[in-house]
Each structure stands twice: as structure tokens, then as C-alpha cells.
Length: 248
Image (cartoon, rainbow, N blue to C red; front, top):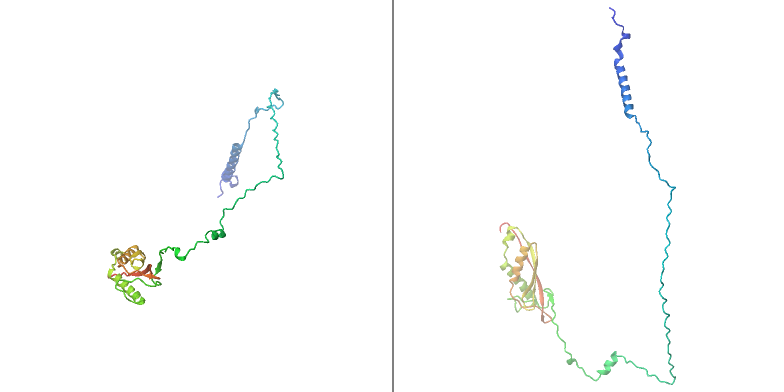
């Protein structure tokens, strides 16, 4: 059976292509219409400056009358009067004597005075000497250590000091609550009268330092140490160990 229409003469076969071509042409024409620019052709008066016209201004001439001051008077002429002195006139010169005193003048002036050694008074100056305990000639004597040799007095002093610390030792409650312990070194001075002064300490905590200073402050009065036969200040250091344990 033969088809009724010829496919070569069909109208709607390329309609899509034709539509796309036409759409592109319309878009191009619309773009050209939007981009088209026009300008005004009317003449505009922008003005100009005339440089030919020049105005000349006449400046009047004014004459000033100036009165000059009178000239200064001429300088005065000073006339020097020269007095001629005869050669035979004797002019007395004034002699100025020196007021400085030399070693020779002092010897001549006080040469007749006999000064003996007994006439010179020497004031004895009390020296505030502080001697360490380890090098002093005669160590301080702790009460109960009298009448011993130097070595025995030193040993007795250390034993008495250890006994004093044990008898007055008290662990601070605040240090126990905070579990604070350690070694505190207390340094103090035994003055010329045997009293304990200048107590200072160094340790891991202020609570322990305060307790160590309290123990040392309870030391009794001692016989002062002597150096060259004179009582002097003696410094001494004692370590106090605060050992904390859970059973306390």
C-alpha cells in the first residue's frame, strides 16, 4: 500500500530548526536596539575668556617727607696727664708676709714644750664585735656547764641545747592539719650580757619558723663568751627538724 503523502514535500519536517534560527535573529536585533546610542546635536555655549582686554591701573606717586635726626655729637677727647717722677725719689715697697705655717715653724714654736706619753689620753672605743661560736676563744657557758675545759664546755653546751629543744618542742596543730614538715634552721646571738637576741629562722613554712623561734626564745641567760678577755656577741645556729607522720 503506497503512502498518501510525499515525505519530501512535508512542511513540518524542519520547523524546529527554523524556529531556532528565527529566535536567534530576534535576540540579535533586540540586543542591537538596546545598545544603540544617540547624542544631542544642539550647540552648547561653554563660554570663553577674553584675554585681549587688559586694564591698566595708574599708581599714584606719593612723596614722603622724612625728618632726619640730628647727627650725634663727636666723641669726647680724653687727655692723659703724665706725671714725671724723678729718679732720685725712693719708693717704699710693701712686703706681704706669708701666713702659712710650715713644719719648721711648728717645731720652733713648740720646741720648748716637753710632752710625755702619759700626757696623751687614749679613749678606748668599745667595738661591737660578733664572733661565730666555732672560732671564739671562750664559748658562752650554758647554765650547768661551769668549771669545765673548753672542749667539755662546748660539748656540754650542745647537749644542753639539744635537751632544751626536746623539752620545749611542740608540733603546731596548724602544721599537722596541713601536713607540713621539714627542717628549720634558727640563728640567734648571745650578747655581751648573756641574753638571747637577734633570733631569725629559715624553713619550709612560716608556721614551723614561728614555733622554732619560740623554742629558742625560751633559752636561759648564759655566761657570755669572751674574745681576748672581753665579752663579745656570739652567734649560734641550731637546726630543728619537724617530722610529720600520719600517726601523730
